[in-house]
Amino acid sequence: MQRREFIKGVAGVGLGGLAVSTPSLAADLPAVSWRLASSFPKSLDTIYNAAEQLARRVAALTGGRFQIRTFAGGELVPGLQVLDAVQNGTVECGHSASYYYVGKNMAFAFDCAMPFGMTTRQQNAWMYYGGGLQLMRDLFKNYNIIQFPGGNTGAQMGGWFRHPVNSLADLKGLKMRIPGLGGQVMARMGVIPLTLPGSDIYPALETGAIDAAEWVGPYDDEKLGFHKIAKNYYYPGWWEGGPQLSFMVNLQKWHALPVQYQQAFEVAAAEANLLMVAEYDAKNPPALMRLVQEGVTLHAFPKDVMLTARRAAYEIFEQEAARNPIFHTIYKSWLPFLESEIQWFKIAEVPYENFMDYVK
Ligand code: CA
Image (tube, rainbow, N blue to C red; front, side, top):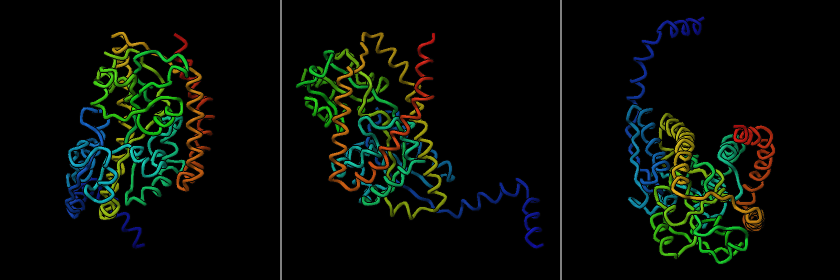
């Protein structure tokens, strides 16, 4: 009887009563101020904005009590050392691409992009519903970090080439700016891969120090002006079919947060994960149209390049799985999930998209 009356009493309070009680709850929560180190420059606005979006949303959801200040790559720590800075508590959190850290463990690439790996949708499916997030958190835990998917560029472009690539033979000896595992695969096909920061690519192309360069896609590439020198724009960027960015949080800092702040952070990260790819999908088509109008020629990579690259990529994965137990564990979840995603997407999604382009 008592319980029933209590429920009746609560129901009788109505919306006005709830509106009054909410601020008093928030007032009990502490003021928290964090710093976020991004790996990226502010000029890479679509990616950098994800961190600012997260900070704004977290502040709004906590009545301004949980503040996160964002810093571009190099402002607090070098862009490629964000994971280290979060791990040792130099900053509370960061925004980065996990494949920057394959030198620590190649398995970090599963948290971002594997050559001939998942698309954006497939990556999200594996992360949120395929066990991927937990597997990746088991790895990050060894580095004193909890991570959250925090954006995706969608499938990237294959980059800018001074001369057309008509077959595998044309890749031999080519100097290309392509970092990470994509570069390792290219090396197996005779390419000399180079890692250059964004700002150094244009002058290297201009002087002929490199013959080709990949960056992101039309919207970001256009700003760096590669099309003024190398007119051949290739697709797809098979090394980044759906690269995910990640928010990384120091584990002690995470556990010290009130549950409400953890919830705010998690929901803001998921929102950033959704919005980034939406922004790219809106901004890339008009950018691509402008590039083509300026005389850029679009090319698909020749089939022998695609097939040889895919074979080389999976040779690297198999070799790594044989010597790296963490990589092996994740690969054994990731690979069958990817294969079943491919079987599903080829039924409805891919034919639908092809038909929509074909019928004019
Ligand atoms: Ca890229």
